[in-house]
Length: 322
Image 1 (cartoon, rainbow, N blue to C red):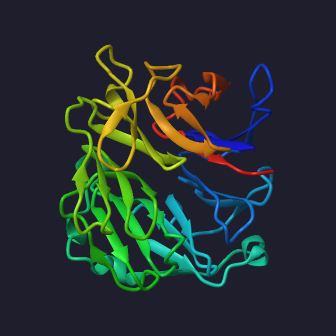
Image 2: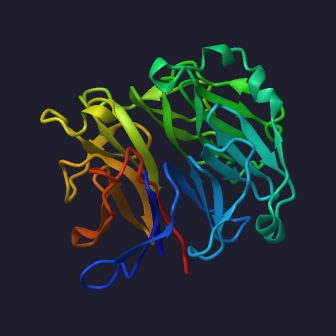
Image 3: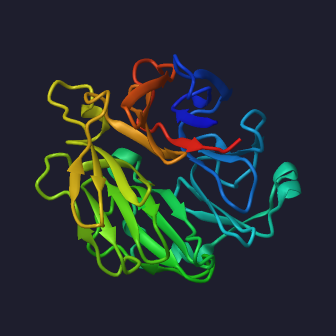
């Protein structure tokens, strides 16, 4: 099943391989869905939203996991049963030794105070964000469960090698306005930011900017399919996406070296969600269109209900084998 989020809730798309597209229905009424993630250590799906962090074992019923900050922007987990949540304002919390029973009853959260000790912490703010920052993305690489990578909007990239107890900054050479990561392994990851798409192969000690030569500099979504890295972008921030001179694009990066534009079925809509569906690329747009690319090209498989117009500045996607 394919799970999608908007500013207005979480939706389930069933029957995507059937002629005529998928059945779309709401399964969680929650505002501001920022992340939808699955993890090898746990069954089911996690949804990070403005109203909390939720878990569903089946894509139907959901439990609020009661993170201390209500507004949860990101979630990550390691194979050791540690579950992490990133919030607005910018804090990172951990729940340890989590299992299926803990998820039903509610995990015990502890703030990782070392995150507040980073040297740049006082700089993490932006006037249009009420002078606050948010932990926009979190990742635990599968090949190193003690490593936690955090992306802050606005505040850059930071890394821990002891499960989040202590942190180091990896923000030199990458734009501070982090929107989304794709982590390949403990050393290689892609950062979609408000001013460029950046790639590192040494865990953020150095960064390469990939979008030189293109006008689209505001990157929002990032994902990988069969080793290729994809990212959606536009020329400027969300408020401009409905203007006549908006110019969205979808890009692919092969080999971590350069970008190529990717044609798709809704070229006038900014791609704000990406995921892999059985080896195929799925994309969701700012206007709620859900697309799937197959051997014969792209097709529209669903339309998410509009939220007073576009479906939201984020439309995360998550594929769950069922």
